[in-house]
Image 1: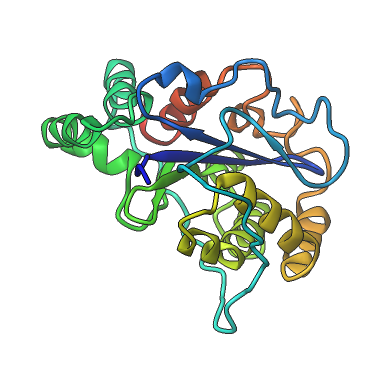
Image 2: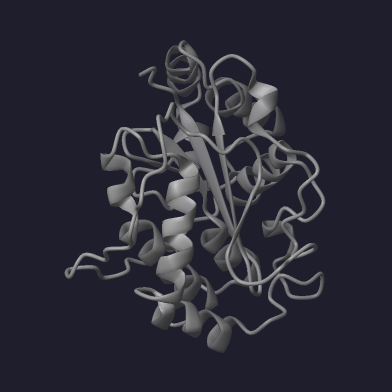
Amino acid sequence: MQKTRAFLSVALTASLIVLAAGACDSDPSSSFNDGEDDSGAGDTGPGFNTDGDTTGRDATGPVDCKPSLPASFTPAWKPPTKANVCGTDQISAYFQACIANLGLDAGDACKTWMDANTACGTCIETADNSGPIQWHRDRYYYTLNIAGCLAIERNELAEGQCPATYAASIQCQRDSCDGCFQSGDATFEDFQRCQQSAKQSACAGFEGKVGQICGTTYNDPDGGAFRCFRNNDNAGTHILRLAGIFCGP
């Protein structure tokens, strides 16, 4: 089985989590689907829509991943820190070195860039995963820190506010389904299905609090955090904008 790198970006709308996963072997353009809209258009109900290629690793067949939330699970809110340490050109160069070309030599290119841009790099990829790009499972996939963006844009850094509540639901779903990655046959579609199930079962309490505390307009143009969401932009543009919100001028 050929090992591939994959990415996963998570964005929560009023009633929809959109998860993007992509196999990134040789054609980086296949990682993004410019036609998807994360703002809720085309929403057919609670659950996941796929944005981009669906296979994060080579698979031989379907895997039944069931949610299993660890008994010790406690959501950990890590408020972001806004820092003006990256120029626009630096953010674009990070994207090219560490995100856009996740092929066999991407690790070397990313390390070279990080070594030459320490302040900017450690803002984009913080040690505690409170930055805009959150890597998981030894850089096997990454998520976008939409909750952190909400905190910066809405100036809501405390526990109990919308961003922390939002993050708790996402963490619950991710942790409930982390076991999917233990199977060599699992794909990101399996992970998605598991998270959809977790959202409605093991994590229903956390998800319900999002609606109670965030309401239904926080991702609207007048909701104070519209820039955090992809809306009609392609995935690359969204990532660059998110990194700029955290680390740019």
